[in-house]
Image (cartoon, rainbow, N blue to C red; front, side, top):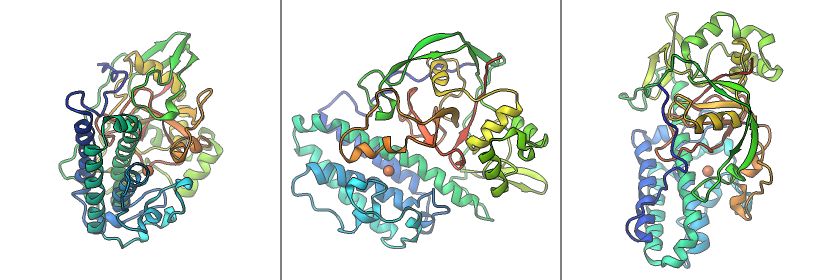
Length: 412
Ligand SMILES: [Fe+2]
């Protein structure tokens, strides 16, 4: 069954009933509450771990998303606001050069202090100040600040996904694999018997075309030549991946990009990330703990290098992000959203005419537009309401700790 694509544009975070101040408060508290809901099962020890340089501690995510509102909303727009602590801007700035010096990224797990409780107090301090500011700033000022608040909330939602992928990576390193949520189950996937959807040659508008919320990297909308190509309606499954493994896929250099094979060799990759063998059987570490491999489930935790090698082994290709977007708009892709992000073979580069916005927030997306690949869709960890057809996620080709999978393209 083909699931209908998400509405375009995505629904706003803000309700259209009530005053603007009420709507901002409601949306703000809902997003902030979701962060805390995701952190709630984790002990202070869990919240400190940084299991690799790319992953950040839960405690850091909770504080950094708070710093974002303190720095860019309260610090710049709320007269008389007093920062919660003079050192927190240094500790919890991520990569904003314009916002001043910052703690080294790979050392975030060294911060036993501030404690998780102190981070909770920081969040409460900023939440109270933001709510008070929304309630007193007046409609005219708030109207101008809507885009900034939207960025702050969407930024926090991005970190909500990272909180789950980062703690899962940490738990996957543990010989006694903990479950983030023992009740967790993989969302159901959908499969079509008719495996391929055909895109005839055509010129299509891609990118975000209206003023509803979007990140700057989704614009400008522009015209692109797409097709002829066939796109797989279905995601690649664990059963298909096991066939690749059993055929010696991980050891066959001719299937791989040179950098990819070097990475797979150096890292000792024999299977997707978070897979481990128990009594000769492959299992996967999930948010629900260590579970058997479900052959029918979409494969997850594969890097771009692995996805590319698999596509070559299968005699197919990875789609471009434009092909993905056109097929998704037509409602032709099963599980486009909500299970795994899907690698495309498109470089993460600016759309024609793109310029980063002025100021510190111009550092949000634009400065990362080299050496990474675009992923489309969303994953099981993406918060509700955070997905869009035009959304461009991006990671380096060796990264595989996110919920990442693939679908194939065919040009024959
Ligand atoms: Fe961030």
